[in-house]
Length: 393
Image (cartoon, rainbow, N blue to C red; front, side, top):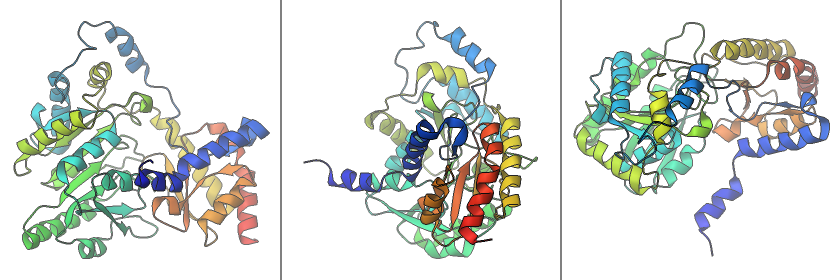
């Protein structure tokens, strides 16, 4: 009766959402202060005051709520092009920018414009598992390649081995969800050389789709290398869900490198897909709002404080993990082989987390620290008890 593919995919469901719903049930049973829910990457701070004030100022602006070009307001696209040029040194113009309803839409539009049935997209595990659906929607195939253990940097020889004549693109996500790793410039330059060789061998480019919603959420003076600068066939997808704490408003953009061969046709295809996939255009009000806040990051100091606290709590309890360089997730090594069984064990201690298998990287677990400081602080004894139960130490 219904789509078999959708019904089958629903059966697998989203581990993150399932654990989030379980957390809500436990909070109702035991009280919010006694449940430590680290499941969902929902930004904790409110949007910056300047952003809220601009919403109020713009909401009655004439014509702001009407149809515009499917690519978005040209003045907004011009500001984003200027921002991209400052960040990358690449000469972007408004015509290479498409406004979209968040990064998920941006990825879907990009893949729709690029892919033919049966083509492959490499993803670097651990990765956001809904990439599987975005690629699958185009009848494509996801090819996961594990990053290096402990550092979560790209495994360049493994990526080189995974590239075939059917490889259409590789998705990069740095700062990474779930590891918090930032791919180094050295790693990305090495990857660029591999992709250049693949293009010569197979006679077509491998596009680099850079999923960048966390690009402003970085710590300790670490610089996120510009993918647009390093890869000539780069397509940048960004949103303001994390940087401006606006996940419910669904606003973002695609930036197509002008160095891509026949970039104008690709942009036109994306604008067409923006319309025919049913998005039509990005929200007019929020296009105007974000245009003047491109360099801001909401709650960065609070996230850093919470990262440091949670990291110290885990290490003190006995867990092994890399200190995240960006985003607001901590990806710790599971003290037992089965991360799914471990996540069930954690529930007994009122800790709600997501096993690494939900990100294509078994043996680890993810904690989202975009939660209250008190939630993290109050969880310390629960993590000690959990580690003791899991290890017997």
